[in-house]
Image (cartoon, rainbow, N blue to C red):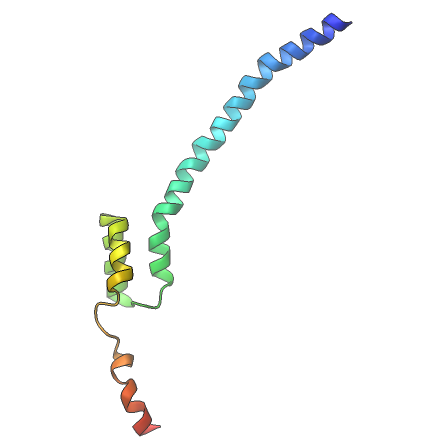
Length: 98
């Protein structure tokens, strides 16, 4: 009976470990590229949700990130917005009219 138990355990180890290892590698094979994709898309999502730029300037920054990657994202945080918004230009006149 002990020999049968040892043989069954040995058979499970010999068959189970390669199956378990292949399942773990399959998870890594899917999760790793998805993780890199999320990290690559993160600056684009941050710019999409940002209020610093609008319209065409936002599109230009996103295209810069697609073509120049993380360098453009660093420049976005340093330089954006490139042009002042119209609302900011006329803030000083609000006290006169209301």
